[in-house]
Structure formats: structure tokens, C-alpha cells
Image (cartoon, rainbow, N blue to C red; front, side, top):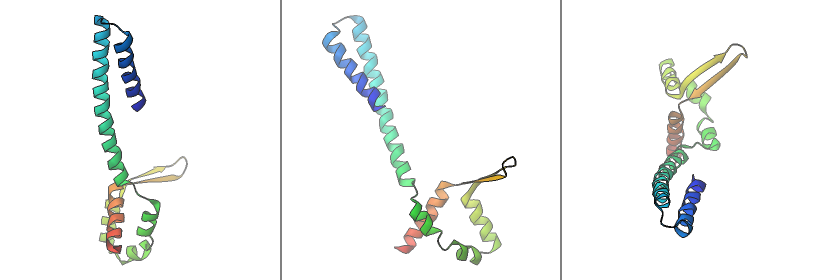
Amino acid sequence: MKNELARQHAEVLQLAVDGGASAATTARIADLHDNIARGETRLVELRGEVAILDRERLEPEHVDATFADFDNVWNALSLCEQDQVLALLVDRVEFDAADSNIAVTFHPSAIKALVDGQAGEAA
């Protein structure tokens, strides 16, 4: 995205210097300005999305610390509470019969909440 914006800025400059005052040059510069404006708007959006993802990223050591005493916590829960925890944590479980593999997909926001809760209790 940045490279494309730089290329378009360079083309505008080149056209302004060498392109003359033809209608085609003027139209091309206008098109490039529109593309640049859209690209810069999208770049700001992408930077915002990256910032959100950075805040939501889980570091392995935080997850490890959160689940270090998981067995004792799990055993202290009632079956109903265990069911609720699983429903909050697990998004999907898939079984591949051909390979006899199980894939578990977690709700990332739920794991993040557990890690953040654990960090808050430690503070």
C-alpha cells in the first residue's frame, strides 16, 4: 500500500514536470489524486485495525501463566460451571476421521478476557 502510494505520488510529480498542460495529463493527475486519497484513507483504516489486533494479541507467557494452575481451578468447578467455561472458551471442535485428528478453535476474546482477568488479580 505504501509503495503504491509512493509510486502514484512520483507519477503525479513526473506528470506535473514533464506532462505539459494537455487534457489527458490533467485527467491522469486528477485520477491519481483520487487514488491517492482513497489509498491514504485505507492506510489509516488499516493502521487502526493493526492497533486493535496488537491490543488483542496474546503473548504465550501470559497464556501460560493464566493456565498454570488450571487443573486445580477446573477441579474446583461444578459440572455446570465447567460447561459454562467450555462454552465461553471453545468456538468450534472439528474431527477429521481420515486422519483421526481433532482441531479445537477457541474464542480469542474469551481467552484474552481470562488472561486480562488473571493479570488484574495479580496486580
